[in-house]
Structures are given as structure tokens and as C-alpha cells.
Image (cartoon, rainbow, N blue to C red; front, side):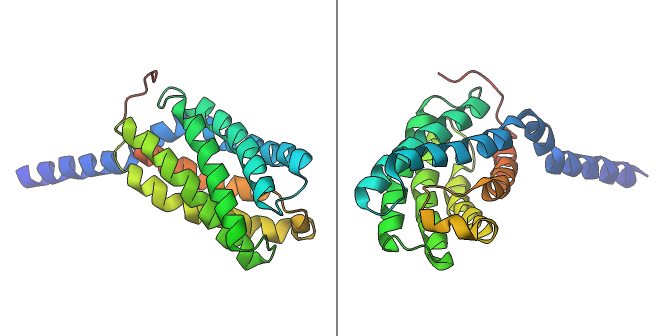
Length: 203
């Protein structure tokens, strides 16, 4: 009888441990919305300025514009958990990652080129954002750096099938369809990473 009660109690604890990310996910519902809004807007505004990522200069300028807009929107969703350094990390990471990624594929627009460019961009953004998470003592920040390249590549993969005729315009970022996938995946990961972090205003 005792062992049964203990086992039931232990099972309850394990269930709580598995489910404790769900309340965090509900509190972070703004994240996927911020991603869905900022990615297309950032890409559109950058395209107005550079008219396609076809050179180092265009990648630098376009990446910075897109990164600032995305970083600001993401920080708004996480403002109770991370500092404004998130914006700086995103803009710098996007600038460096896009510049390196676009050059690595010689500014190609094939599906494989977009996947590689996305992965390299994700490395730049993910690593710097992970440093911000680590600065705020978020356990598992390493996984944010590891997951972002995959999520960015997946975003480009989805977009390449949805707006295949517009790929030739060489946007800095994938479109809304890819942003939805990216936003949901990273939202769930953030919920897991922040499940042991008390929401509080960041300095």
C-alpha cells in the first residue's frame, strides 16, 4: 500500500516535471506572433533598401536592418526575461551570419543554397543570442545555439516551396510560411529553457 502511494506520488512529480513548460509557453504566446510579424516586415524593409542580397555590401546592410527589426520584436516578447542586449545580439548575428552565408553559396538561390545560407545565418544569430541567455543564467542556453541553425534552414526550406517564384528577389529572410514554422519551434524551445526561470524585469 505504501509503495503504491509512493509510486503514485513519484509519478505525479515526474508528470509535473514534464508539464512545467506549458505555463511558460502560455506566458510566451507573444513570441510566435512577434516572429510572424517581424520576419516579413524586416525582410521587406531591407529589400526596399538593398534590393536583393547579391553582394557583401547588400548582405551587411540588409542583414543589419532585418536583424534590428527582428531583434526588437523578439525582445518585446522576452522583455521580462532578457535585457536589451538581445536586440544587439540579433542585429550583429544577423549581419554577420547573412553576410557569411550568402557569400558561402555565392549568392545562389537554389534550394540547397538557401538551406546553407539559412543555417549559417542561424549560427550567427543563435550563438550571440545564446550568450545573452547564458548571461542571464538560463540553463540550457547551449541548445538555443544548436537549434537555431536547424530552425533557420527549415524556415528557408518551407518558404522555398511556398514562394518559389519570388526566391530570385534574394530576400534577406524567409517569408511568413517559414516564419510560422520557425516561430512555433523556437517558442516551444524557449518554454523549456525558461521553465525554471522566474519572470522578472531584466536590467
